[in-house]
Image (cartoon, rainbow, N blue to C red; front, side, top):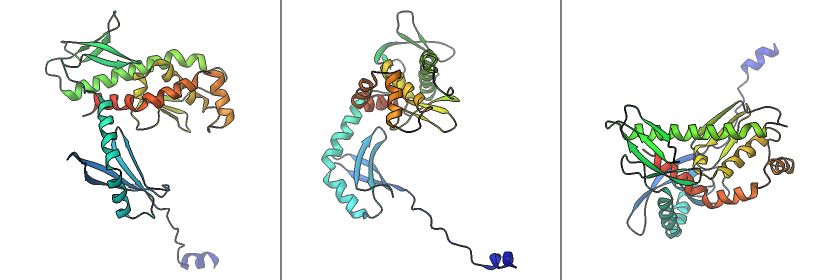
Length: 265
């Protein structure tokens, strides 16, 4: 009888948490340029915020803010937006162009690049430390970018392969697997299943900075948070971690933009 009554009762309505809403708005800068600004209404946002990264401009609004107030904020900060977009463009540098690109960023340096013919696309490290990019004449831009991405990932995996063994002692386990991908803000992350994700732009950074990110994420195998216990583990394994954090604060945006420029398309 009770089960029958439960079936006849109206189902309880469960209120859903407000979701993030995204759309794009056009905006004209004082110099006449038209730019698209990503507008995000986020229930977690506490104030109106305008930001610029390698993906472009983003206007974040709390749910209580009106669209009019957001557009007013955008107009009030149009000079700042113009300067930030210009700086972002300078960070990006040139893209990858066959026969034109003369160097590639790798491990904190611009390494000389020479283009050679070949039946298959590949990038090799020469004996003198330079790079050779072999590609057939018929190779398209997408294939060139894919070859460069594969080269960067191979170099990143080689670096991790050299560093990882020295830091495994004292950890409960090794990472389940290691992935390289392009991220907008993070440099690394550790998933609950033990998957370690690293930003591909780390291969462009100086090696000590890349190594620090690896150590940072490995220490999350011990402590999932950023508590004092976590930072003690980082300090014990990588005492110069503060220097590398300063490096990322100064160079991080440029590194991500440089990679995006090379692999864009």
